[in-house]
Length: 244
Ligand SMILES: [Zn+2]
Image (cartoon, rainbow, N blue to C red):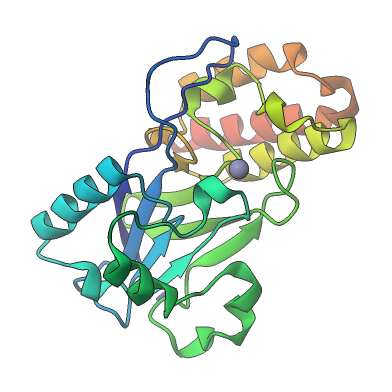
């Protein structure tokens, strides 16, 4: 049977910029997630940290959460950068030891194929291309006993940004990148039971969310050029209804 994985948010994602253009006082920090097989504790041989870009406060909190789990930084085996934006790439402030420890275990997406994936306890997690926000962006898909968890980084910034059908406009996307963004969103919504977004708390994919998204999609930029997105939402709704 495929390995099932446990996950823990080490750093809570935040984004001061709001979909309506407002700016809050929240710190800009990415969601950082630890993943390891369900049937064991995290060790340096079986664990993965996704998007290890820590703020000072985020690092202190991550340290506390690792301790609560009975683990430490020494139990982190590999790190993974979902895409090359600087707010997701390795940064461990005021802790050169932790930084060099993680650096020695670099496993960016570019090096993933060189990693001995087939023999790894992480072999059953899947990397799914989700371009749009960044061409190289890869989401991590894992099976948890309660369903599928997709750790998607900035393919979805937060539940709030998703339901507003807004993308991170400061990056100035062209129309093709906007369409790719929505198609990546559809790829995620087709299967995920839980989504861990790049700058917000995890949230569940349920009928309420799918209904809200389908109703809001006609307000999305480029929506007429990607009606397949709406079709995917409808198909997922039908499947969800059939298991209720
Ligand atoms: Zn990004």
